[in-house]
Image 1: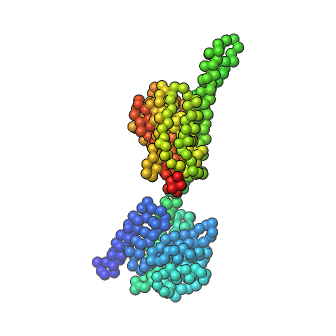
Image 2 (image 1 turned 45 degrees about the vertical axis):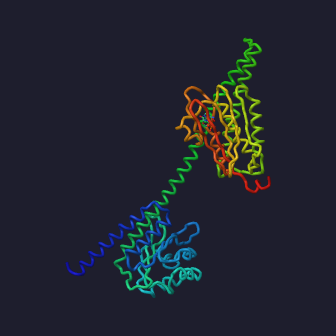
Length: 431
Ligand code: ADP
């Protein structure tokens, strides 16, 4: 092999190596600017004249080109540049749609001569050296008819500069960058579509829950009401009382479900509007407990709070809601009645409230997804009306208060729900 041939083979081999390296970099699962920064770094490592490089992308809404990635420049400074179509090297190469070599400093200066003052100043400030580049090779970045922007590689010090033979290679690099941009943008679109699908799925689940769960008590209410209205049957007073009681029970079930559903659609941790005020949690709980005890006779509710229970910062309305959800569950899932014990404990930095029932309990596997929306344990023996929204709503509220909620349970023995709320140091000193 003569010298020129061996030189050519060497160059092709190193270009092939460079392409492989850049392609590998561009397939990394990173966001676009990070990906392009890394690709530019790789390019400047494998292509000697490319001492600095940048990617300018066209933003159709503003009609301007902006730098998204660079190597060897101060990127923050480069980002100040906003080029119009036709302006400087970027604007011209984008318009012409073809790669362009500016092999002499005069050619570079000429192509940049129409750059607006502010842009030129930012460009010069972004370079860590005075003066304009000695040589530049720029290529449009496009995929099919979709034009994204321009890849610019520049020589600042030399001695190696770009030659005509580098043009196809740099064009290929720009094509690879174009494909990477395409991939990242398509992925972003797919992610956005998935999010919409998720929201739609949640809505459908909600509709399914609504229609299924509300139909049960409604059917029973309708059945008892129809029976009471039958003119040819005489129900005695006790029977009438029982029917009316069932109608009331089922109406309460429906009311609770509707409340859960409404709360859960209002409650997402980001949207929950908490208005904290100094509150006596023990007093709030006493109210909720006596309100609950009035409704039930098979269960006995006991509350135990130490006398020095601190004042906390909380939103009374939401906190009452949490206690109601948990107490309703304690009643519902202990169908044979029993004791429900509500205790308050004071720890150095927070307080912990526990609500313990003697009900059906929850198996360890079912305890894991308990706080996920719509999750309901499938109990073979009993059929309890519900939505699977009470505990997720409680968690969102407690977490928005800076607290935590968790359960301990044994199947067949009962469940204890714990929730912690932080103490407020300023309030403590006032007490
Ligand atoms: P639901 O409306 O179904 O009661 P929740 O979100 O309040 O929804 O509770 C989710 C599931 O957790 C319930 O379906 C039930 O299976 C289980 N669960 C909640 N609290 C208790 C409890 N105290 N005892 C037994 N199981 C419970």
